[in-house]
Amino acid sequence: MFAGLPELGISNGEDLKETLTNCTEPLKAIDQFQTENGILLPSLQSALPFLDLHGTPRLEFHQSVFDELREKLLERVAVIAEGKDEERYTKLEELLEKSFPLVKMPSIQPVVMRVMKHLPKVPEKKLKLVMADKDLYRVCDVEVKRQIWQDNQALFGDEVSPLLKQYIVEKENALFSSDLSVLHNFFSSSPKTRRQGEVVQKLTQMIGKNVKLYDMVLQFLRTLFLRTRNVHYCTLRAELLMSLHDLDISEICTIDPCHKFTWCLDACIREKFVDAKRARELQGFLDGVKKGQEQVLGDLSMILCDPFATNTLVLSTIRNLQDLVSQEALPRDSPDLLLLLRMLSLGQGAWDMIDSQVFKEPRLEPELVTKFLPTLLSFVVDDYTFTVDQKLLVEEKIPVTYPSALPEYFTKFLQDSRVACEMGLYYVLHVTKQRNKNALQRLLPALVETHNDQAFGDVFLHLFTGTLTLLAEEFGSEDFCSAVFDGFFLTTCSSRENVHRHVLRLLLQIHPKVLPTRLETLVKSLEPSKQASDAVRELHTQLVDKLDSQKKSPANAAETTPMELPVATPALTPSTPPPVASPSLSS
Image 1 (cartoon, rainbow, N blue to C red):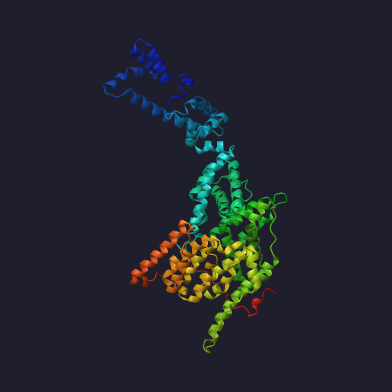
Image 2 (image 1 turned 30 degrees about the vertical axis):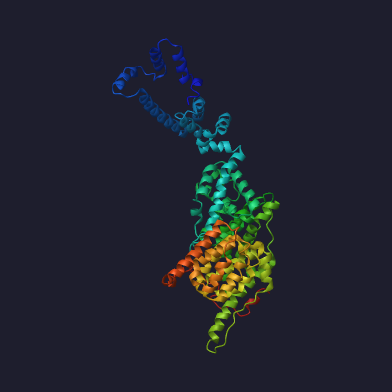
């Protein structure tokens, strides 16, 4: 406990033991030891007997004096560190040299740690001693740990790894939230709110202004993204940079070539739209990548691969398509739309680019613009024509049939093109938000086979199950249930646990609206297998319990909770009816 005192010429317990062992008059020896090692203040000696008369132990007195002096010393260390004296760090180094031998003494340790905290460069020998002692390493300040970590990547990785795992778990838990809602979903939180999260804040603190540590974290994120293909690492890449931006850490922000691009994109994500002004700024950053600096495209693609960025870009694409329909214009004539496709393509190709280390923007397929997007616009015209025909022919009582066929090349685009697939999925979300069951039933068969099975990814299923609650009344129809469950969800439910979980989440929300016979069949088909996870079992148990309680109280079962209304969004229909020939925009 008192190790290090002899190095400073101060007697410790061993010295007292030796003195008492060898002396002939123990009381005199103790008195001499107290005089030599007590507070060297002559006027104090005459005052100590008064404390004895009041029954105050000498230990209590000395401890109170010690505590007071330690606080004064800590304050003095802070004053020296914050001052402008050119010799301030020399003074702190001298104090560290004198106090470090006592670093394991609990009463002195705070002083030693405080001195090291304020030193921009702690002597390497001292850092190695701290790193080698688990107890010292645990209690030292993050400012000291940064100096240890920057030369010990493995140790830093051990510190960061649990945080990265925690971050991924939090994101995945959010996607499987029991609260299905159109208004409050995975993308509802603002960027600034998201980066106030525990993991981002801890990583920001650990990095501080240390560029080397920042580079290490980015390398960890790239490696994990390559290993797992998990796009949440891309989100963390952007959030971490913007968290440092919020703190005005110019030492890092000024040297990260992605800073201004990420800052501009962050503003777009906040608004959930890329306006014309910001589109020009983003294009300027992409066009400004100079020859020999192409490697920055790897980081830019990772930032654009962030699901929050993808969500913003595709929503902006949908709004651009709305404008084109109203203007009776072609997709290829819209520079803003082409830029959105360019960024989507760069983001969707992030993994391939980082894996291959070939830093070149992926080529945008011409047919995506000349064939796929016009097909989406033709679907809008089909909706409009169907609505008009219903109004015109209602008096003649002529049945109107909604088109059910899909162009073969549309399905093939969803299978072969990442960008087309992403836009197709968001179009499905759009028509579902508009409560357009005809369009949804028409498009669902095309989602069974998509590029990299994106339609069965957690981000899409999270949004899709939320928007399906708006069509809850339609689940009273066998045709609609068949299209949604048999035609889509149940095609992979047995082989994909995440799909299994999302279907159960949906049923927990809409089960009062589902046909009883259909519901009974679904509960049986969704019964967990022996290999199923606890999460699936728990959801299934919740559903069964809800249905049992519903049977016991039929009066309550008859009560229905009003479904949540969607955000007021403009329908993907033209303000002025387009000519009937619009479906052939692909020409």
